[in-house]
Amino acid sequence: MSDNKIQFSPEAQRFAIEMEEAKQDVKVPELFSRTGSPREKIDEICILRRWNSHTPSLLNVWGGGYFIRWHNHGTIIDPGCSFIRVFQSEIPYEVGDVDMIISTHDHVDHCQDLGTLISLLREYNKWLDKQNKPPRTWDLLMSHGVANQFNSPLIHPDNSPFLRWNRVLSLDDVEQVQPLPLITREKTRSGMSGWKKHISAYTFFCQKTIAQDYKYQLQLLPTKHKELLGSRTAFGLKFKLKPGGKTIIISGDTGFDDKVNLADYYKNAHLLILHVGTMENTVGERLKDHLGLDGVTKILAGIKRSKPKLVVLTEWGYEFGRIPEPGNLGHRIRFTKLVEERLQTMKIKSYYAPVSNNQIMKKIPIIPADIGLRISLPDLNVWSEDENNGKGGFIPPDRIWVEDKGEELHFHTI
Image: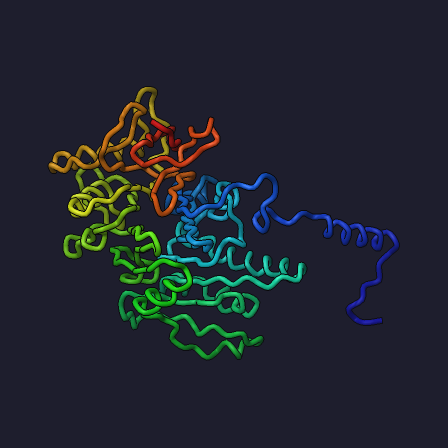
């Protein structure tokens, strides 16, 4: 008898047979293949973020990230705390709809679920193999800090065959950063020992390769934000859709710096997504790594000549989730209203906060974001849960108003 064979009692043998039968009966996880009534898949950007920082991991509340679907290609951005849970439950997509993951920096709320996603891809391809289907490959783009943090799963030979690109994108020549090793498919640890730089110049790679495969141009934007690894390696994102011509800008986590005018990089955005962080303290000290009230208003003031069609505020600290007192606005809405009021004192009256259901204004809405905020592409219409007799539908952004219940935001039709 082979050394690998186990001698079972008759009872153990019966149990083993039952377990083999149970394996065959287990349904495919919904993340692999959606079951039940299919929901419509369209070109859109889905906001899957609620709270930032480590709070979702500690308190079992929602964190998340973003998902862009454009021309049948899906891009995950910053899969942070509880991203997979949100992705699985809130939008009509599955692992097979993902083609690329972009992770802008190595903080937990922007990359915690990346390693699990890579493992899921491996298991998904095992499932495809049993159905005699070809494996799926993903393209990964990341900062230096993310590459260092997820080094082991990225280079593991069970994963690397399915990672078609594995690029560390850099705005600068950051020589002090430990580079990611060249991806290898060798089966032994010694085969992984040849370390080489794996850093791509973002200009050529993003403008040529990504534009060809994903039908959008991608540009990295500077941020004032430290990774765990160090500074000058995190980045924001600018997508220019082809065809359609609409430009989407996600600021990423960044502070406002008078020396580097971020507004210069955000001009001509049609959809501008800004990361708030929190509210400045009572003495008005500027936030170091997030925009806050001062940064958001200065950016919007700086792009007043090239007005976006829609502004979305996200990356909220958990303190914004306190339940508002009866008759008062919720805290995310209060912040958005403060942005509107501060801009008006700067004599900029083209923006407004959609806080009530009787407010039709031919101005640019500033919408606080939450899980469930969906924006169709390229027209930038916004999902309202009121449309189609409560089934939901997309409407022009100036017809949306937002109800803030503390933990949740609801998006309604005026």
